[in-house]
Image (cartoon, one colour):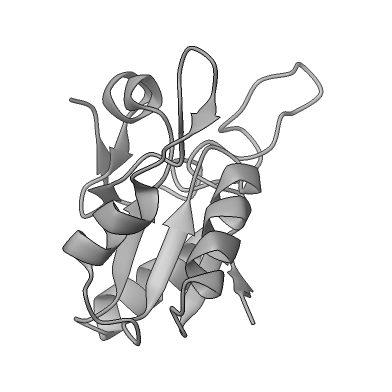
Length: 130
């Protein structure tokens, strides 16, 4: 079963379990230009321009994290794509998969802007831009 956690819980897990891996599944543009958690492993789930599923996603995760029992935390912009990717990993036999709800940028506020209500950046967790 895929666990649902928030950014603070993800950060706590990453700090307390050296085997935990944060996988950023956003597009290359999002990862490089919007920013990303400093410790994230970048493996896109979908890619621009067509937003097709990355056909090498499972192989890339297996290469980065060969232990299917390792705790994996998946994140995207707001938690939607990462849930799809988490389901694919669970279906592939990974046993400790979490989806980071709120994502990197969080939900839109009343002005249709992100990072003002929740998300990794909102909670001031470590991140950088490329």
